[in-house]
Amino acid sequence: MISDYFYLLFTISLLANSALMVVTHQSSNGNRISDAPKDQMTESKEWTRDAIQKMWSERNLMGSTPIHVIDPPGLPSVRLVFKNESASLTGSLKHRYSWSLMMWALLEGHVKNGTHVFEASSGNTACSLGYMCRLLGLQFTAVVPDTIEQVKVRRIEEQEGFVVRVPISDRLIIAEQLAKSTGGFFMNQFKNAFHAEEFHESGSASSKPSANLMHELFHQLNSTPPSIFVHPAGTGGTLSSIGRYAKKYGLDTEIVLADTQYSIYYDYVLNGTFSKNTGAHHWVAPGMAGIGYGAMGPAQIAETTSLDPAVIDRVLKIPDLASTAAMKVARDVGINGGTSTGVNFLAALHIGALIRAQNPKNQEIFTIATILADSGKYYETTYFNRKWISEKFKTHGGLPVYDCWLQVIQDCWISGKDPLDIGRKMC
Ligand SMILES: Cc1ncc(COP(=O)(O)O)c(C=O)c1O
Image 1 (spheres, rainbow, N blue to C red):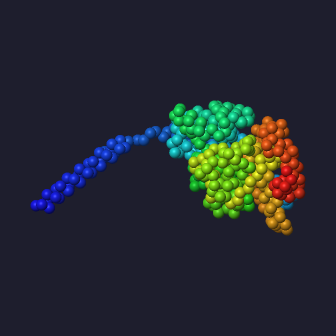
Image 2 (image 1 turned 180 degrees about the horizontal axis):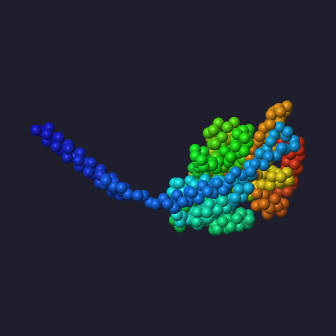
Image 3 (image 1 turned 180 degrees about the vertical axis):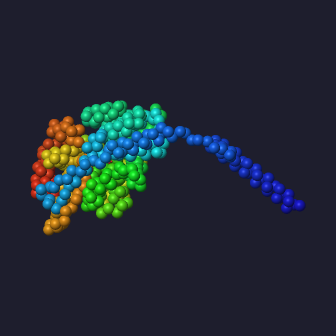
């Protein structure tokens, strides 16, 4: 009897408790679970399906960018292969990259019919993403550094994009604020290239072509992986996609990051530093447009950068004035590229000289692959202009140091010696 009484009390208290939990649960998040049976369609996917189809048509139109092969006269066992991304429809490596970003944003539902897209960019991504937005009938606004070349602004405007100029370190904050205040979507290449890069490969398992640069290059080299792939990082999205592809498919290619002088990426990759503290105070203007990481706070993977240290095998640090001089030498030998192309040309000559020193009698040909990322024509008024170089690189030593590097790189092109080693001592 007594036990029945306690059992009854116990049951009542249990029921009261669970009722309380339900009430608490409901009131804490305000959600109710729908009653069964129910059967209802979600939001229409028609526009998105159509947009994705347009993106695949665009991918077919893109085809493959050409490769440009050159044999440095001083390095008989080295072949340099430049993947010429300046030949893509919007003129840079950011064409395939923006394709992937947009594909990711469509699939994840961040971009829908009528979404106003915002992006922080040094110009190339803005132009390419502007193109993708125009293709899909979407509004686009680019938040760019106030130091941007006018020719890049014109390219964005040709794609019907709006351009907002801000100090370089404010780009991300302002793009985010603008998107928030207008109900738009901030694409945020620095953060989301990390996710979107997987979409570069989306063609591999189907009849659709992959947009991964390494995939394309591998086939253009008759399925022989290059010994080295070298490139700098801005967001790090491009190099990470190349490195991931090489690692995932077991390609025997060393992935080399060529970092700019005042960028924190060298230390971030090698020692894991700068992911909690900023390197902004190390940054020295003008830097190399579009590459390096300096003024944007700590480098946190998939937050503020898409550079994945896990796929990088080796890191180089290259002086900015040397890269600027390398742009000129590269152009004189037929590689007419911009800032990152200058870095790539110099880094490749350095690596080539080391290969030669380590294998003096080796008849084997080593392929060093890299990217001609955008055209030199965008930098006529800046990195190819002696007056601009003299002013902007004054604290680096100005024209005398530039001319010294120019001479060293020209000589090493012919002799096969290491321009980085010699220039560091001489210039
Ligand atoms: C000319 C050029 N090269 C290289 C890069 C760096 O590419 P990523 O952002 O994929 O690291 C950029 C970035 O804007 C660029 O404009």
